[in-house]
Image (cartoon, rainbow, N blue to C red; front, side, top):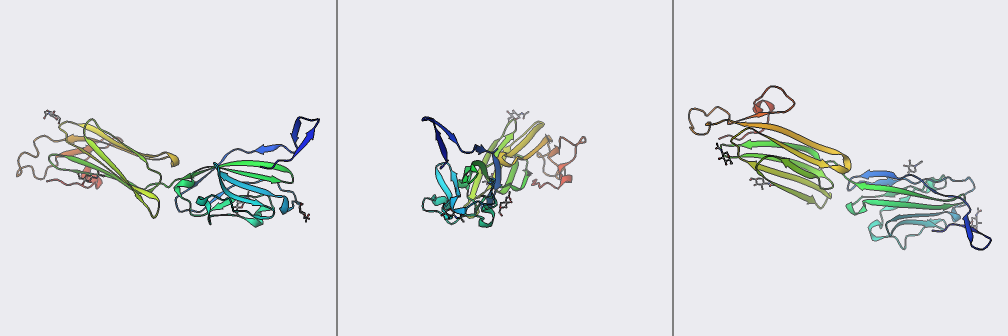
Length: 262
Ligand SMILES: *[C@@H]1O[C@H](CO)[C@@H](O)[C@H](O)[C@H]1NC(C)=O
Ligand SMILES: *[C@@H]1O[C@H](CO)[C@@H](O)[C@H](O)[C@H]1NC(C)=O
Ligand SMILES: *[C@@H]1O[C@H](CO)[C@@H](O)[C@H](O)[C@H]1NC(C)=O
Ligand SMILES: *[C@@H]1O[C@H](CO)[C@@H](O)[C@H](O)[C@H]1NC(C)=O
């Protein structure tokens, strides 16, 4: 970056104006969104656009450069081609914010905006987080005489969430599928268990970047003997399910959960 120095008595160099570093700003964009990365500086009315230098970087990659009164995109990183622009009407007012079109997962990270202008130089850091909340997270319980199957599902989120089951026994399988058109994931997770005593089962799905938490817990009360004879107990549920926040034990069928009993 170009910073102007005055050279005083040989070795001591002082900048003309202090180099201002502002606090870090944060932008969240979902894959496919257009984002604006904010960057402002103190403009003077007499600012000559020819003497204005704006440089946006992501790590060692050039995101967008502007000097000698125009965009200079020869050294622009491949990941930013045809995706960036400055707002020219805003630039002379001290607004060097950058538009980034069609955000992709690899755009995630910290950006710096360096501006050299007639009052000195400023540097801004902007954190771009690429994230989208999961839609419609839900869990469903199916059971028969032998096994209880919990299925957790959620879709169109980014990045991958963490999924954890809390259960004394049972095995879980989690799959996350990336949709290469939308750059979002669909999540499915199964817990299969067989019970012969009352147990509590819980699931947690977390997307830290957006503080999205889906946490559910139930206590399962298997009913002994109900599967042994097929005739007499046909209409009796083999499993009672209670929810921790509700004091009375309810039959889960009252809550419209999906059941498969045979
Ligand atoms: C702006 O600066 C350039 C280069 O320093 C100079 O040639 C030009 O005359 C200036 N324009 C105005 C309007 O001051
Ligand atoms: C800078 O310009 C962008 C694009 O017009 C706008 O969204 C943003 O609010 C402006 N920032 C300021 C501080 O005016
Ligand atoms: C969930 O379980 C069903 C039945 O066992 C199986 O067909 C399906 O592939 C499982 N899905 C996942 C994500 O583990
Ligand atoms: C309950 O289940 C566990 C594990 O499936 C088994 O080891 C145990 O013998 C069972 N107890 C009864 C009383 O059926």
